[in-house]
Length: 479
Image 1 (cartoon, rainbow, N blue to C red):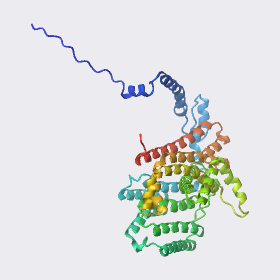
Image 2 (cartoon, helix red, strand yellow):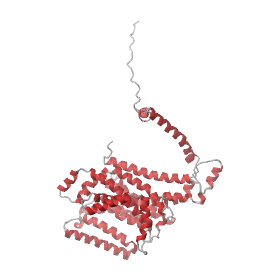
Image 3 (tube, rainbow, N blue to C red):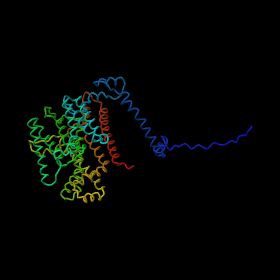
Image 4 (cartoon, rainbow, N blue to C red):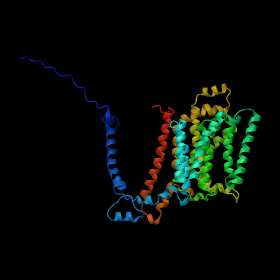
């Protein structure tokens, strides 16, 4: 019998509590006694507040029905849940305001066209290949054909494929467009631009509809201006040009009507989420270009331009947005002739655009000051003009730097659209307040405010995530 000598096994490593859920909790929630107390307090608050809210909003809520009798009957039986029937019954008012029911397809088509035109611009990596853009265009045509008919499908196809055709035309330089410099060539191109606009005006005036002649002629002239002056342009740039020239004309005709056989829908019928998106979209599309010009003007070496821009920015930043809206709604018409008036919604859009342009100008000015002086000197050494230097070197770097600041301005603008209610325009929140005053639906205040809050949160969160995507794409996340 052999006697084995006992050998102890090697010691096991100590438990690792620095990784996983336990490690994260110890590091972020229970790192100090004070943090542990705050964590326990937060958990207690959540435990007290969330279960009753879920029970009220989901478990005991009334979802189906077409009148408040459903909710009243449930309440009589002791069910104290939310009455989402109120939102379901009035969802069209929340979405479209008082826009005529038979004409709401015009709102739907306008936003469908906007969505398909924005996708290649907001997600350029996904639509870098031309085949993907063709697939998107075909999908848009099919959607428009199924939902709205043949005319909408034809126009959608023309709108989405014309930028591709324009880019190809200029690349192949058909007809010698975009060649030549000097004063004579500049005057010749300006003359051709005016001639194209006049031809478009008289063609639409005589053969289509006189009311639509001027906006269409202006859009055609702007496209001709880019075609004759800018030379080779990428498909994405042509899409941006169409978005800022053709789409506003299309949206104005579709939403307002009184042209091409569409009935007139005055702006005081507009409301709900539709009006909120119109105000915020117009503000976003116009405030940024104006803000860029104001920022450049504030840094200009010309004293008059610099003083004008500084005065405008400081004046606007010194007053609240409500004052600007009252000024545009009440004071501005006093300076107009008796037989001349401007729509109240248009005045509000202009006021919001200039108000946020002043704030964006300061954000962009900060970005301009962050660009090294060598960038300016290198462009000047190459003999580049001021606008070529700004457009190709300075502004692309500046806008990349100021993405976080611009995202704050864009989010504030989206939420401040609710202030148009003070001048009588009923956006989503205004419609919610009006719905609460309905004698048939008294007592459902919480449902209306929660619905409006959720819609705004979804819009703001989506915009915030997109700006985070832009920061990562342009390598602005230095963490």
